[in-house]
Length: 96
Image: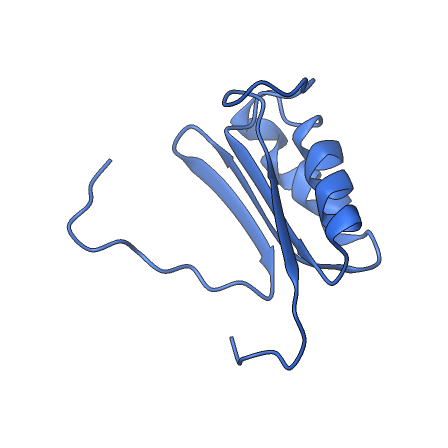
């Protein structure tokens, strides 16, 4: 991913970590957007759609069709779905 001349927002929602109310079971839904409010709202909305790993594809499809979303990641257990202008970088020396 090339450096951006303008800032972006990255927000995460989780149904398994933290104190916030979530109707989903995703470990993490991360959304990137030019708008912080939009990234936060979409992370919550996408996360609410994930109950099992079988829901990842439909959740990603939902999120990527929202205007203003640049990229998103959905993680539940050892399964993950990615879309958009994101770069996945493995951590050295780490194993699950």
